[in-house]
Length: 44
Image (cartoon, rainbow, N blue to C red; front, side, top):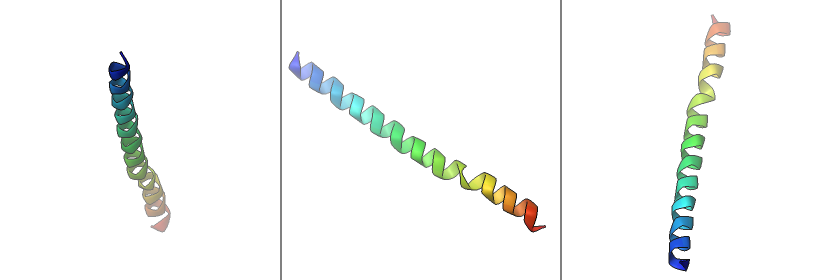
């Protein structure tokens, strides 16, 4: 029972870490794009 709980906690931590890293990656990809578009629109 304890081993199963530890295993599920480890899987849950891995799942959270994976989602956290993916959300950071999407944030880093998604934030500069509108800024670049706005700069490009106002530059011309």
